[in-house]
Every structure is written in C-alpha cells, then in structure tokens.
Length: 277
Image (tube, rainbow, N blue to C red):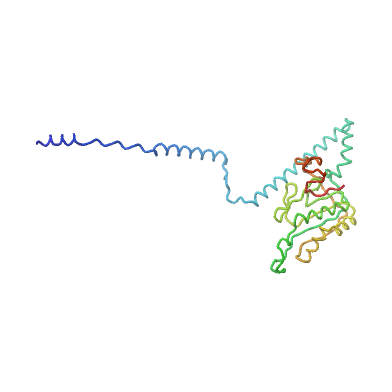
C-alpha cells in the first residue's frame, strides 16, 4: 500500500481530542483583584493619609487624649459662660424681668456651685502607700496600699456633714450631682482622670469641718491603715482659699422620679456624693 494511502487511513482512524474545560480561575481572579482594589481605595479615603491602626496607640494614650479633650472643652465652656454673663449684665438695666431673674439666680448660685467663692477652707490629701509590699506582714492585702473610691467618698461626705458650703476635688468644683469613680488606682471625676495624691478641699467653719472628719467612721477606718501600711493622710487649713465655679453641665440625663416603681420609698438610687442639705 502506498505510503500516502496509509497515512490517510491513520488520519481517518484518529479520534478528535476533546476540548479542555475552561478554568474558573479566569473569572475569579479579575473579580478578586477588582474587590481588593476597591478596598484599598476605601481605606485610603477613610484614613485620610493617617494610620487606621497605629501600633503605638494604647489604652493609656486613649485616656490621656480624652482627658485633654475634656479639659479643653471645659475651658471653652468657662469662656462662653463669661461672655453670656457679660451680655446679660449689659441687658439687665433695660429689663426688669431679667434683673429679677438674675437676683434669684445669685441667691442660689453659690449653693449650686455655679459661682466662684473664697473664704476659709480645710484641705484633705489622700495618697497611696509608697512602701514595698515585701516589707509588710505576709498577710497584707495589696489593695490596702491604695486609695479607693469609698475613701474619697468618705472624706467628701464627712465634710458635707460638717457644714461645708463649697467643695473641690483636685481642680474641679463639686455639686450635688457630682460622683466619684475609681478606675484602677486613678480617679474619674466629671470626665477627667486624676492620679493620686487626691486633694479634697471644703470651704466653711474649719473647726466644724475638722471635727466632722475626726468623728466620721469611714474616715476613721482609713486612718487606721495609715500607720499600718503607710497610706497618706494629711489635713491643713487655708484662710483665703479660692474655688472656681462649676464648669460642667447641670442637666440631668438619667434621673428618675422618687415616685417611680423603681424607688417606691423615695430613697436616692444614685451613688453620687452627698450634697449639703
């Protein structure tokens, strides 16, 4: 058989090869690339040139940043309040109604903590112990070496009981809705964070204030730990103290009526510091 015929026969017997199925990756890869590009674009717009997750930002920095914002806004509130007072004083001569309201406001502003005051005061300073735990008895609780929320509240309530007419904790004026909170060994007060030593000052009769501190059971309990573990406690007098006015908001957002079922006896449900009667 001629060679050409043989080759023709082989070609006729050869089966056609099946076509390979198209890979799904040729469709998946472009979709994934498009989605990744979109995410990169959204991240760039959101970050605005900054790191979305800075590695050095920790809880301490967050607290310090928040504390600084509150401090700045409080200064702004004081500045705006001064402007309001100045404008109100200019308007008062032409409005008898406004003058009457200002007179009523002045009569209660001091007790409410809304005006600066000056006079004789007693200052109490509480501080953590600086002793090494290894130098104390084996059964010493490490918590005994720290100033706690109830210690600060005990001093505050004793001073109110002693007839204080105005009070400050650190650099903030205390009013009836002020609350003392502890976060670890720091003090959280009206949006600001403070580290020990904690300074509480009360204006009023110095002798009565000191007597109230001496008789108060919570303060006496704290004083028992002063020689035991080295807690800091000191009381001093100042004849010409100056207290700034309260600079925060006096609006209640979470108050409930004493007549509500949640408080049928009318007893206070808040843990705020006790205000003067």
